[in-house]
Image 1 (cartoon, rainbow, N blue to C red):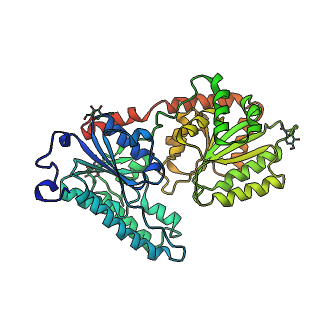
Image 2: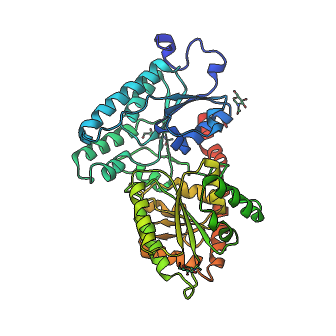
Length: 443
Ligand SMILES: *[C@@H]1O[C@H](CO)[C@@H](O)[C@H](O)[C@H]1NC(C)=O
Ligand SMILES: *[C@@H]1O[C@H](CO)[C@@H](O)[C@H](O)[C@H]1NC(C)=O
Ligand SMILES: CC(=O)N[C@H]1CO[C@H](CO)[C@@H](O)[C@@H]1O
């Protein structure tokens, strides 16, 4: 219990020396196991001797480096209610939000001692920004907002079917207004920082860009001769088709990786169409090599697409192309990226100014990418011909696959690989120590 006039505000009056260390509450109203950036923030703060309260839902497992860190305490929020299929979104959402307000306020006031900083991820902005702003005001805590994207663009693209819905306007006004209450503002891209300075956001500059960077676990193979060994143990552990292993190891079958959230905003159909087109040209005369495409990730449309893949395969539309969907633990996923030849990213940005973390991880593993490119911030991460290629249609993706994986593509792929290694060599620690660390007073 930390409630009470003298203990309610930062600094707590009778704070012990330990409690006087720089303290940061890191809050994300989402699954901590799928919030890499916020957990990296937490790790960086903890590593520099700060005390971290990491707050969010606990659904997928956290990296052990986070869950076992002596300077990080994890506070799980009670799981959010699940939407009953029969209840319309517009009835369910207010109920869920009220419950979240209750749980968040409870934890941030009664549950936790006051801290110097509250670092909150946006989105989700409702009700996080409101609760965070009020608690920070009452407790003399400095609020730092980390903008990953906009809540209202996600709402309009996934739920309410368009920006013209009145609730989208409300959500937008809410986000613009409360977004101004941060003492510090971080963004994931320069394009987003530019937008935030303009109306309707009008957040006073300077807003600082902290680009996502790969975690240490994503790194290129230090010795290419170990690729066979790494693939063998990976295939065995994760039950990937063993019969393709020898040909993947010797390079006859080319290895493609895509990680997807299987949601409507990542059109997996695009990759599938491109593969069908690729396959229709493969075979001895076209000299296109067979492909093994490994897809990782969980999500709502997975079963539907696996069905389609199965149907296409049975109908003979995917000759020489094997598509496998697997779930991999973090370290195995990192190994897979370092052994693959090309990564495919289907991320479409709802705001136009965020960037896919999975491409960051692919670069960390030295893997060049073919990525959907139809949004503004794309060029801050992927540079055409340097570390990857962009596409907007299935035809364009099929062209890239044919060009890079066909005969004569090895040279270009090598150039891209070197570019990816270069891009991935700048790590989160460097980025963080040069930007956020000094603001928090830790570096
Ligand atoms: C935890 O914080 C202390 C400073 O309070 C620091 O000396 C120590 O290195 C940190 N622990 C780790 C594992 O980083
Ligand atoms: C963040 O935005 C707020 C609100 O506009 C502003 O007062 C503050 O100076 C900004 N801070 C930084 C570091 O950009
Ligand atoms: C290069 C290669 O593996 N080609 C095969 C593609 O698929 C056809 C039909 O299944 C085989 O006959 C080819 O050998």
